[in-house]
Length: 563
Ligand code: AMP
Image (cartoon, rainbow, N blue to C red):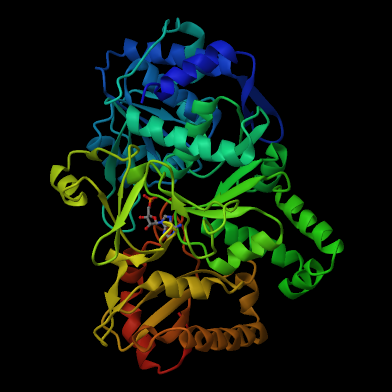
């Protein structure tokens, strides 16, 4: 690869100095624009400041912040200064923050936009140099050196700075559905390749002009957003990137951005749909959509209500998207394609190409991106090799060695099925498989997909290790939950769930069939540790929490029960 990500960034600094790159909400309405000149200019000054701390080349510098303009400026400062980024999810607990800072031996930390900083601060080792972003909580701005003050007093690092292809650009600690986080090592070569591949995919579909707009809101600490939104924008230089203000203002933030490219994760696609259903019952919407002309107007209105009416291409990744949900968005006229990737390949692996026959189908995750090699192991495990893949898990050589085949393919841990043209379907996750007392493996994800297709279910988990049959634990949709206090509605929901259970079982083979469905009263959350920061369910955690109740559930002998 001849040009790495910093080469592109420094070109944009020179050629696009006055072009607006970021629009950052400042809270309560006002926004601030940053041009390419300002973005790289501030990064050069902060890079000089980091060097003044005497950090050795390659030192790890951490960022703990929700997405904001300064997150990306800080990453550029880290790269320009000669260092490696370690981004920590802004929702992480003090305990995990401490683990990641210590494991990565971070030499400094940027503290940014955060909702729970006082609870997180104990995770930061005493004496670690910290820098507060302008949007950091007041306590952090009081306690630490401020970004703006550093920019004001520091001379910029000058010149055409380069990093070597094999130097580490970042460690990405993966949330992992189980166990402690692992530090995925990404070189400049791998990240640059992946970011360029993502940018090219988007350009081919959305157009390469300067009117590409995106909103950065999925956590940048995760590889999906890092590569597809940040990385692609840094390589291409043509994107106008907006950030969100708060969770409450999210729809308004999207409407401000009017994104032309929009990516999200299944749980949020489901939430957006439920938001629509809260205003208009599904059956009524379906009726309207079928009416010629009016149907198009209604569809456009629904998308406009979500702020997505300018979207030219939308993507979903990071977990399986129920096929009916994709079809629903497609009926609204949204070009939504599912992709598949993981931290270990910088989220560049498979994408759905809706514009090419046979390269997209609901329930399938698309075809390999150019340069990605794929094969299936004899047991069905998906094996992947690409120039965008990681070089190993930080300080875990044995785990690294075990993760690759002899010929250098990464063992994804996902089970798949492929069509001759490479179209891939994920059929389960090797490590999620469990056996009921029937002695045969059950893959929970496909069953969960069937359940999640129901509009009144927000999330669910299928488990039942060693039980007579598997159980499903379901969380009712957010707008429904408070209303379930009403006993009439509860009964109605119970009847509906019982019918769903029978419908789903009818699609499953004997040993996969669900013995019972348990309705959870409480939602799963990132804060409670029952969802990963990218909002996947943490199976082992949820299983541990419910473990004391499981025997009792089965003993009741009912099909549908309340937890
Ligand atoms: P992460 O490293 O957090 O991005 O997690 C990667 C894992 O998420 C993959 O190995 C898959 O198990 C899962 N995953 C990502 N995209 C999809 C998808 N479209 N369908 C099913 N599973 C997915």
